[in-house]
Image (cartoon, rainbow, N blue to C red; front, top):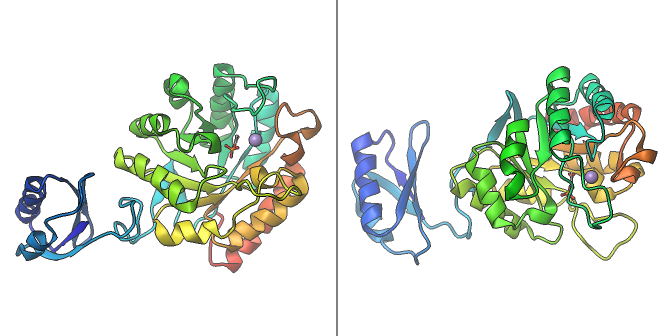
Length: 338
Ligand code: PEP
Ligand code: MN
């Protein structure tokens, strides 16, 4: 339930309504707008007190939110959230390019990619240091050494960084070395991790679970918002289906669904959806045409010898072409890359 205050309600009026909400056994969460304040009625109890709140003179309207998520909903916040990461914005009518290797493998590899991402017009440098691999015998990432390299290269090339945090044990050190924390597909419903990550106050890049519905994904987002962290970006990275011509199936329809139901920026990751280099370009363009506010793509100087996800990583020259093509589609759908 949300309480919409009268236009220009005084702070005393807002306080009084909050006290009434508290008396009903809920926690009030005010969200000041330009002319009106909305007060969220938060809690796990069944709804009651709607008519009472409606009858208060300071209140314009009380709306029951029909969805199980509140803070993520458009009812709670009609306008798009724009997230600032190291001074660079994601969301609104921007299309942000987040690119870099699947795994940080060395300073040299990361620097080559970082330079090429910057030169091609990318906005963020990504790279994994703690890798959640399907097999225990696969490369598990460079760990803290990798985080240090990512941070150093990000600073050298002048791009904010994104890296995955896989566990609460490595949350603190990961947060110290990056501008944005990624929650991977395998951890979307690791509620302990996502709540703790949210509490750092850092921007969070939340990937859709590979078998999660749109609603489950938004509920995971709600956990983060409920910790008071509104710096949140959603990512569609493909879901598990029966097809085997791609690694996952990019659910393009999830992009407008997330955008209709929530105010959060939505990024598309065609690399992990496709699993194959040849499909990264068409899926990127499809994602942006469908309204994605960013593209996350993997880039490696020599994918044949990459320690993870070699078949899907683009070489820098192909990445440059990708950015140029994305720019054309972005402009065609009223968005901008720069
Ligand atoms: C990644 O982006 O490095 C990654 C592991 O992605 P996902 O969680 O989508 O598989
Ligand atoms: Mn990868």
